[in-house]
Image (tube, rainbow, N blue to C red; front, top):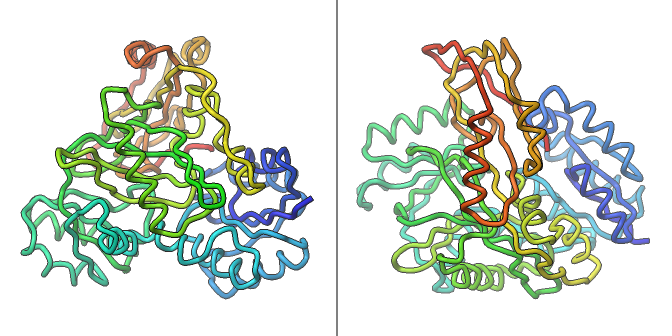
Length: 417
């Protein structure tokens, strides 16, 4: 059996990789696990240890130590492939080590081109693909001088963060300064992008590449929360047929060809503007926000398993059902939760696939500023988008919360994957 050493594999990935014929080793950073899973991190990593054939811990924030663990683990495990399947912040180093060891799934440069927002913008410009006006700077203070070259509003974003963190629509210099101060509070000091604001509905294209052939599994319609942030409030898969989904898929295939990406998943975000599809960004991983589950509920395609089938050289299967699936994020007042009712009623609904409500009485409900501070979600399946909308409305009517509002948002809920 082929030895596959994975960095940041979720529990489901381990079982599905084994089902595709791999021995699986796992590398995780407990601190990163805590950021993702909160108080459940220890239990989650215990499950990973149990499911994996071998397990190592690493500190992803310590490049030298992280690299040492990867090299030692690959040797001890007899790995034939080293593959990072999690967040892009720690993906680049793993890709470089894998390439140096001759165990890479993709070149480190291809992974960098996909994950790095500036590198992708430059590559698209070189190939005449998805033209978007942009400028980059080594830090947000240096970007002040760039604003004069754009019509406001513009989108500003840190290039090395994921999950829409720090991505903001700014209308004037005062809002730009507020954005920079907020970045300082997070400790981020890296490069930033200033981009023209693209007008149009937003989507993501889910792809699986196998030996250089890019399979468009589907297009997901995205619903965003209120500006100036770009926090996702929901997703629907597949996107309604009224949109030009073929053009969206074609734009992503052309982008993947340009990057040199050959095998694995990609999650690419776009807007469908009056001038056609425009790529926002891409990542060399599966989409978050339960998008793989939405795809499976709506089409029957197991995206997670298809990743490992692709590693074995097998193309993903086709759609076996014609349904739709939505994920809807709740939006509560921020403050202290006094009580919540209706959760059991919601879970009992036959069309509810999953319900997450990360608070209990006494919990602080934060203001929503990024994916980590959202207020839980429900996943529903339906025969049409109209039916899915009615079902989400039904869920909202059953969720009864009493929140003592506060003047200053505090705290953060956690979601488990």
